[in-house]
Length: 436
Ligand code: PMP
Image (tube, rainbow, N blue to C red; front, side, top):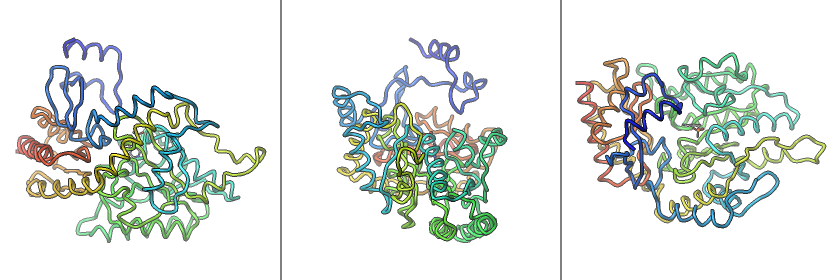
């Protein structure tokens, strides 16, 4: 079937996420047919480098044989069984493997499906744990420009006006402080961290007894535009949580499983959170699986007899689906075997070096990067400048996606040097074309 035919059928039947459907048909839609390594191929056989790792998930590459084989084997043995009150070995093993690489102090794993659904579970766990300790803490503290997913609890803790403002009347009550990743003129990252921590402290002085959790995206506010902050911010949040009896809830959906060049972003700051949300890369970018890792003391607040009402009445039909778990186990095994986290750190270093000239471009405001997570903020020359740069890259065989005027690069963690050089080369040419 030809691309125009498929696009026509798509338009007749499908509604795409985060997509203005009125513009999509004129934005040169691609129909993706297959993937191999760092590349995607459309139905006409054109090859594209996957510069955003299929929305920040691909670890080793598309079509990784050992992940595919693990899914096939698991499908032959057990395709699905509920995790509500039953268990299975793949689920147990993923939990064990996650705890093996997680920051110390985290002792239990609660599974979900997507990042949003795990964020949602974490938000409820933090509140219910406080209730069951006999505390009245219905408030959360979070940062402007934060993003934790699109379900309403996650939106409540979000701070990206474009995505979240519409829903304000529907949301739970929170206290939002400034973004630690947007510096005032002349301000250093460390100064900004201290300033936002002082603002948080002010909020906690007034209402700390009512706050169940401080919620942060550690080191990188990703969807907010790859806004990066100083690790001292995380150290300060940990201290405030301890001082005011709030849980430290970190959302590692975007940063976790290697993207920053460490297993988790909090590892850069040596901080141990109370709740940690992971998703995206957990299965190597193949199937949806997410989880909340919690400290034992949080978990213990949920123990009691049937009449105590302390059960966590929360879970999804496909929670810990065995095929997803098999993919996660194969991915994590490969990551250990191949040293993928160290490779991601090396990829990040190379990206940084290759992007140095891009940072000098007069149309570029700033290049921000932690590990492989990269944002190139351009000075607007049209209504959709970031989009125009990504379109120019598409014509040169590279798929990337902007966040407003921030061009995001997030290659597969195991991308080869050759593919990385091509990615940056095409991005530099595309910036030249659009910003000339
Ligand atoms: N948290 C963060 C930090 C994210 O970046 C995202 C997705 N980009 C989510 C949560 C939501 O994850 P999902 O899209 O899988 O629901």
